[in-house]
Length: 248
Image (cartoon, rainbow, N blue to C red):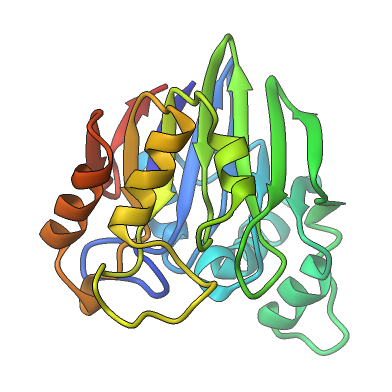
């Protein structure tokens, strides 16, 4: 598997990155996991406007879905369009949410997207074996485990500490994990992980490599987050950047 980071800023676009969007490729198939604010720009810059063969939206917060609404124009109104419906795996309510964001009265986006509702379990998307489970976040949110060719990539999505995250990440080769909050502060509960909590989850799950994402630059120091995570996890660790690629 090959991972391309299209966006990694947490909660709102940062000065150097759009919000969450990750393209995972295997066997010629491209799965876009989340499609947050600004990621349509980097999709064109790094992989191409029509790269995705399917989309998986982990939850319906704006920083993970907004550009899926903008993408309607690309597929519906292109000079060589309209394009056939693109498979979208998402929590309940996604068709109505994206239609509302798109903004036409009584609109639908189901001519552009073919929706499949997520629920905890394992299922195929293209060449991937996909397992999702509910995370500890205020809305219906799914962490994701992708398996292909004996390799495993786990993505936390947005979550506070929970047992489901450890199950998904167990023995993963690469763990793409959020670290939104700084340690030592009175952070809101049941919302996000700190660097230390991300490191602890990586250690407990026995992952091979930890990639930190969803940092909110405006809220604190990246170096503090890395220091806290490396105090809890001794394996390879780095903060991802928009445009970075990784072989899983």
